[in-house]
Length: 572
Image (cartoon, rainbow, N blue to C red; front, side):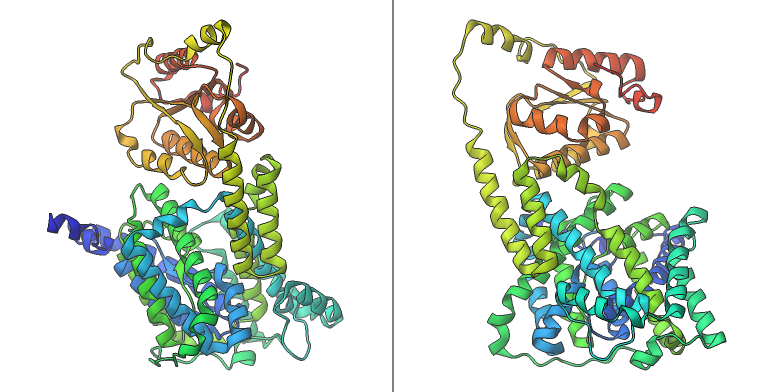
């Protein structure tokens, strides 16, 4: 029993040692080196845009990347500085200085360790999707707005305001100082980053843009602002240990910021781990991952670092490059360390316009813009939650945005649950109509796994579908979700059904929905779900669903190949 309990807390790196061989090491070496190169411009860009030095971003990527891979609960997750923290960090530095930021990071680390050790980290899964999309959209807009000055090469005295509206006014007032050379170089960098993946994914566009722009500036002495002209370059050598000052009188004032950083770190790291699971076929350990994130956030301030979390884009790059175990993440950290030790002097030629171009692409990719049409198809109350969270993130403060968004979502949850109580007259016609929905009289064939959802599928309970997806290998070729007793559905529940379908589809299985009614039926048919799973796979009752399952099984062996044949959109 004790050994079983202990195994629940083992990092994935320890589990990976069993059976680890040369083939695994070769794959991890290639992936780690590739993602290390990808992380280099991002680490510097996140450091600069957060209001610290570029080396602080690299030191953070080295230390956090090593610790999160060595101690974490995901086999392929890459940790480091991310865009989600840029706005929060800049605001903390403005109010409390660098010492305040280091305190906030360490406090957030302690909170994350507590969440992971107690299992409370699972609570972050209950944040509704409109809130997550709202502040993700807002953060992306803010990141892009902070890079306009460097992208245009604006020449002005003083620093750029931290508030969005004031920042836009500042840019408008100084737009006449735009440097054409900087704009041209930045545009060429941006085009390289965007176009390069169309030719090959082996060489990341950001690396090619970084190397090309740096070589041009160094050889031709192009007069643009660089890391050297603004920061004096990047020092060579190991990160220096320096214990930050810890002021007890700032604990309470900094607590809201620390909670925001911890919440963002938990959300983004677990989202990244889920993405990694879907790409690699593994299943992460949420609590172990949060503890590792906490240890990393406790450690990086000792070397002047900034808050860290799991990085979705770098994690995806890691997996696409062939990573098999956490050792690829460790190699990624060592790659960055070698660059600091042996190539740091060359960094002084890196133009800030190129780093701004890198962050423009990061902001676009992290913005979840493709989710907005889905949000706009939802109930006006869900749209209001998303819009208010987005607006407050951009105009006010991320902490306020998350707090208000959660309060609104909780009120919406109460409202939706209150509407699930129905009092209906039971007539002979209603009884006759209900016979088509009765399961007891139906024969469930061997090739069908059937589940029913009873009660509301809202943001508080959608995780149960994700748990079902984790046991997908135990399911039959056709899976029927009976929704007759699902009383309410929201955006998070709808997204959970989409993800469940994607998991089934990837494993060669077919999902059929049946029996939807009331508010869930209206939401489903105003969303993109019918197009995704096929209108033929949404049936009015259990009898019709079983006939559809028989048709799928007889024609395609249950694997749903009709989608590839273009039949999924045929009329019912």
